[in-house]
Image 1 (cartoon, rainbow, N blue to C red):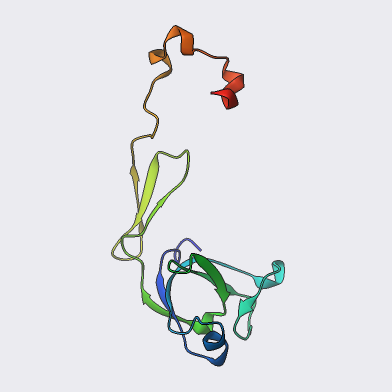
Image 2 (tube, rainbow, N blue to C red):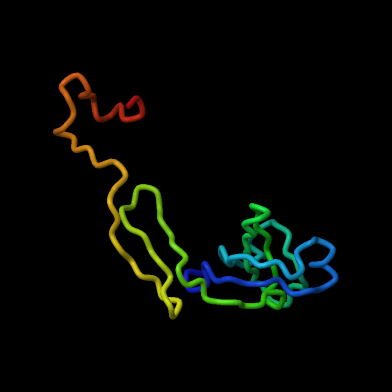
Length: 128
């Protein structure tokens, strides 16, 4: 999945995609899966156990499609991924490769910089 995540795609025009209002819409690949292991709607005629998730920013919604309904536009160059709690980001490069780089942590205050009155028991982290 990681090699296709972030690719820009267009949904092909078929009776089903027209009916759902998704024909010719452009979106971004968010993942892929084997539909037989999940319980969700897949748009298209499943010929193999494989579906692609496409997110449409203007709808703020994702849909699952069969591979034959997906038209590739580009490899998503410039797409960035960050994960909460991880001081790194990944940017999709020119050839579709992911470039990892360190980023500054959001919270830069050091434990030793807290005043005496701000000290707390570490196991009560949810109260801070």
